[in-house]
Image 1 (cartoon, helix red, strand yellow):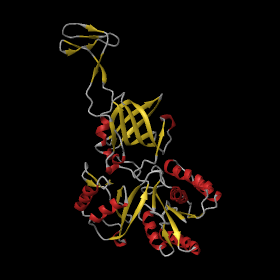
Image 2 (image 1 turned 45 degrees about the vertical axis):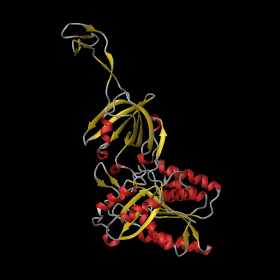
Image 3 (image 1 turned 180 degrees about the vertical axis):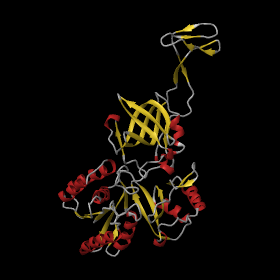
Image 4 (image 1 turned 90 degrees about the vertical axis):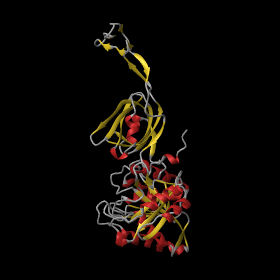
Amino acid sequence: MIIGLDDTDSRDGMCTTYLMAVLVEKINAFASLKDYPLLVRLNPNIKYKTRGNAALAINIALNDKNNAAKVKELVIDTVEKMSVLSDENTNPGIVFIEIPDESMKNDISKFSLRAVRDVLEIREAKELLEQHDIDHRGFKNERGLIGALAAAGFALCGLSDHTFELIAYREKKNWGSPRIIDEGSVWAANAATYPDTWDTVDIENERIVFAPHSLDPILFGIRGKNEESVRRAFSMIGSEPIERHIVYRTNQNTDMHLIPAKIHEVQEDRSYILDGVVSKAPKTIIGGHIIFEISENGSSIECVAFEPTKGFRRIIRELREGDEVIVYGSVKDKTVNLEKIRIDRLNIQVLRNPVCCGKRMKSMGKGQGKRCEKCGAVSKEQVVEAVFRGISIGLYEVPPCARRHLAKPLIRFSYP
């Protein structure tokens, strides 16, 4: 049986990953896990999300066929008791897949990928559940059925790319209080396990980034390429008492949310990889954000590096018209919110007035050419000169402190 869950948390507390960790322990009486529990990050632009827009799924082997009803009852009861149903934005969904066929797999696989890249309606999830006679339970407006079905679909069909995260949870008495973590041990764990683990610390900005600041039960999460790496880092970290921990297989840090597209194809609330030429030079706007424009075949779109991306903005400031780039990010208000940028060609040529008598000629007015103020020599044309650029061709990313869950860090890229 595959069980999918979503939307049990709220901005004021609780966490669907915690509910799943508790559920995994409870289910041990009736079944065993066939694979790692699955943590799937869905479209990061959905306005209804609480924090990271995570959905969860497990694939279990029942100890006895007669345990199916008991497991379903246990899951529903746990969700009812632990979900923050009083929050108007908490609308849990549960999906149970028991006898999948190829038609179901194909349909759900497409739906799951769309849930990461597109904007779906509750109706679409319910129609698919009914079409394939999939047992499910929705609460309130049932929005959680979208994520529950998507996560179950990935558990059924697999992930094209994956990473791992070990999540440690706080004792309930400490929820809402400041987290106690030995920072020195975190830096030591990072030094010992990087690059097999990543986004534990942000070296450039001198901060720890693997622990949230919200009211939820999570103490910290360690991301890495395999279970061995995240467990090694975990063993080195000193902290307040930990109630429980769990290792998830996940689509985090895979760029699964990004859609290769042309500029004219972009839609709001989706994430893209777009080729273009810088058509308007970067400028700083209120708040310290840097904005510029790229164009391709007559279409253009603005791109922005927000202030929280810190040093990444130094790269963006160095762009100039004519540079050929590929941008990675989400589209909001007809603007690409940058996660990464690849610079493929730098424009190193600029038109300037000619030099005469050791100084540049001055313009005599529109269409009247240039004249040397010293000797009076006249030139009708500007000259092309090469200029030094403060950046190089390559792929650049925002720092860990500004990285989205789904964004693939450079440590996972192979780029010449």
